[in-house]
Length: 438
Image 1 (cartoon, one colour):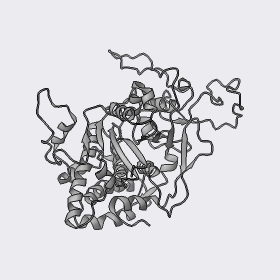
Image 2 (tube, one colour; image 1 turned 60 degrees about the vertical axis):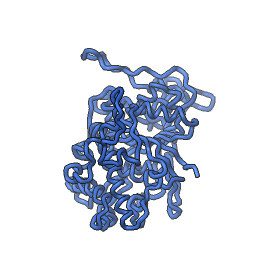
Image 3 (cartoon, one colour; image 1 turned 90 degrees about the vertical axis):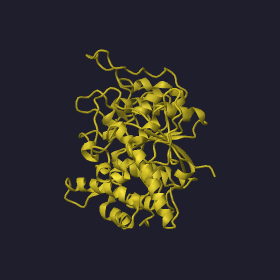
Image 4 (cartoon, helix red, strand yellow; image 1 turned 30 degrees about the horizontal axis):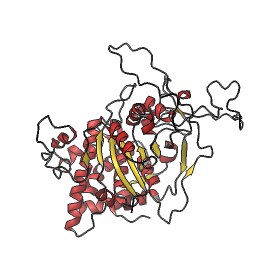
């Protein structure tokens, strides 16, 4: 049976990114096919993000061997049926100064797990898998001996991530691949500017990012992914508009550097369609919690029995709970920002019947601020009680920025509710570790 969803995941692992990837790869083959893991900078620099992904596959190979010894099913059937491509992408934002979240995720992105648990980190020989062999070389990747020489669980790509995204979209029928972006949108922006029409072949782009009606998490008004490359986010969001130039970020001021950094061009004046973008902002993701007690109840017994996966995930999630505990007087809990986007792609359990809910005004005109001194990465929407353009009337007199226009402005579907805030953590634990969901 063909999978219900075929997806590209653009990611910057990252604690909750890894939980999102494990949730996707633990799906049933008929539910999900992960075609590509597209790696970007974000929580840490891009090579550390790549190491975290390769380490995840390394740990899963050890986990499968452990389960086999115990007579258990391997699980992770979607991964076994469809090993994904892994491609390395952007190292820095399009125009802004590089900012990372290592203050929260740790210098390696996973709470120092590579130092604290070196037996669960592959040798550095895996790096050769992502570089083309020298001309005339007979190298096949077998020197990456800590993996299955090379790993059977993923396919390393020599293409840049944004080019791999375009290749898959071009090689498959339109509206058959969903892109899930759970990091800064730099790779997506690069793909969109290189070939806008091929990028628009995506069925849907699901974005974790932004803060619309709630506070930010990196500034008072901005969420990390939107802040880390606000220009990229603004460019991708602009593709949802009938007139992308109406929300396109302004050109940067003249550079004092020589040579000046490249400025990506605008989109063509006419495009065949608008991008279908679904947004998961902090407004909805922050309230989906993983409580420490529930996580430890699911993982500590497995880790004590020798599960490499429970030991590895327990190490960096445990560190995260410790970090959160220093910031809060209540029981530590981890907001499942990125995993929520993956759950959106999966059929919910029959016991959780309410559907996903979009905001009453969806699709909304949500724009990303790129030029503000204090508001970089802020999601701007019009909350004024103003009359919109009437049917058959495209513009409203005096509406300089097109907030009331039928032709200008972005059109973003914003998710505001899931099938169950309380039930999601149990679903995640059950799918990844086999722990029973509440």
